[in-house]
Length: 362
Picture 1 (cartoon, helix red, strand yellow):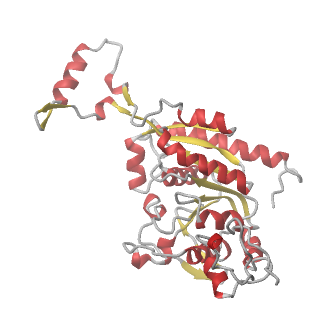
Picture 2 (spheres, rainbow, N blue to C red; picture 1 turned 180 degrees about the vertical axis):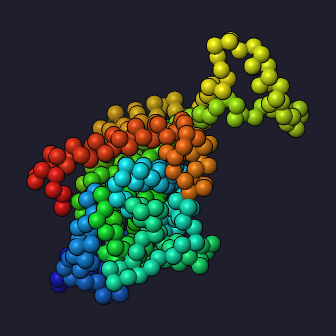
Picture 3 (cartoon, one colour; picture 1 turned 60 degrees about the vertical axis):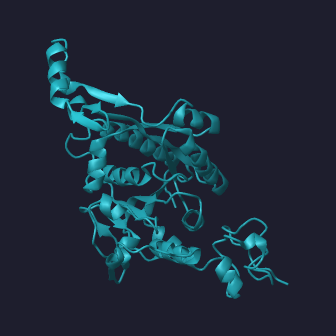
């Protein structure tokens, strides 16, 4: 019996979409194709959507995935600020939010409550300014912002394919894809359907409990043939101006504010050449005694892009949907992010120059 062509995202030991046990064997558990195979409607041959996706993505010059198997490491904040930075360099930028169950991009780019519009060309992204277009499930169902997306794998896959084949991104220089934690349906679909990915930026925090999962993200990329552009160590110590700190004195179960007294004491006793307004305080929030992301990169043979401190001003910018590069408020995190983003762009440009065709990327 013809078992049909096994999909690239199938589980190990897949019996084949046309086999009698398709979608029903033990090896089918958790496979994104399980429901389709079990129904007996699995198509033979290549996925017909791939042609439409390829045609739509032909106008996208560079494609960057941002991922981390660990949740809560600031991956979406990095994706948003990366997109702001690229747009600020006068590039045409698209940002695709693949987090179906917990989309953050509308909030982080100041686009809450917006909905998509359809035209003869397809779905229109929601724009921040003239050169940063955003697509998220929140725009598809704006009236259900507080409702959970209780979606199975096939439904997630279908929506992601629509983002790839139906959204009119126009001619853009960079498409940034923000992925949810893990290496599941969303990651399998995007890596299988989106050709010509320049690489992935992997975000982690310094502690080993995060990197246990992040290593899986690195290995996922290696198995899928996706270049790792580098790893970012996020929240690498809390850094903020001394003047922003609040000092308290613990009296039993109560805390008494002694900030004014402490600042006055420091000003009176500080050396004349030391201006307290220029002093920043650093504190190690997460345990990096194991060497952090830099050591992990050495062990796994992938680039280390740098560290971004935990900056309250960056957190405020994300909450307000603003770029941390506007003004001088994010004086600690913005320079760190800028340095990392410059390394990413340089890495992509080098690979493009070395590719056949002298930079003509398909």
